[in-house]
Amino acid sequence: VTIGGMVAHNVLDFVKKSKRHLMIRRGLIEEEHVGHALYLRMSLSERLQHATLVVSFVTLVITGFALKFPEAWWVAPLQRVSPSVFAIRSLVHRIAAVVMVVASIFPLYYLFFVPRGKQLLRDLLPVPQDIRDVIAVMRYNLGMSTVRPRLERFSYVEKSEYWALIWGTILMSATGVILWFDNTFIGLLTKLGWDVARTVHYYEAWLATLSILVWHMYFVIFNPETYPINLAFWKGTLTEREMLDEHPLELERLKAAETERDDDDDES
Image (tube, rainbow, N blue to C red; front, side, top):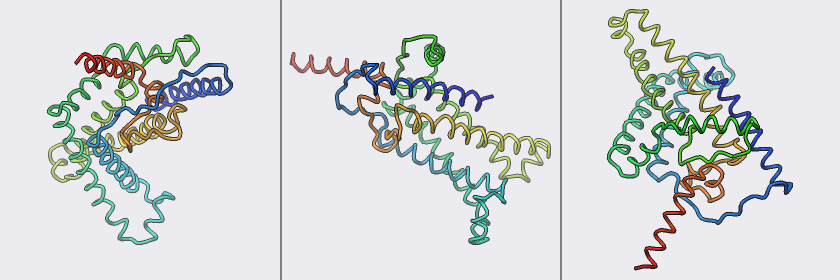
């Protein structure tokens, strides 16, 4: 249900945005002209946190599913190269798990003690407007409204992904520890409890992997307004055009702040 909903949402989004871009290209819609300014989207610290999570997550996915599907076409070459390569799979998986947990703990300091992190957390908190935005976007993509929704710094897209990451990390870490120290937890939870943890770990891994492939990769790469790729994770900035397309309310607020600063400078 979750992944199917993501697919349906993204198909509607892709069709609507593609039609709009074709109409702009054919001169049927006049595109608003913007400047060439760049706006900070991710600081260096945020990009490093993101990179650490990406590397550890991909490593966990590969090494985890390699255990479940040892005969898969993408696993067999590793075993043919050297049996020792596959033999260290469990060690690499555990190392990547520790890295991901540590990489998830550091942002707690960033979110609660660093000014930019505090603002980041405030902007990521769910608000009633997110529900209204979901409805407005669906109405727009289904052709029930001609008004294109104007979204904030973080829309329901980024917020849902962020909080799903938090929940998924907690769940995978807890069940992962139970699987890691199997003898201890079988004694505490019984074999049934350990089997439940293993099942939850496995299906949450599928949910997390498919969510990244279907949800995150679409909005970063295949979204017509960011294709071929959103470079914020690498350069840290978005162009004014990207801001206008994806975060118009934030752009409006930033421009108002710039104007206010310029007026203050003129007065001084």
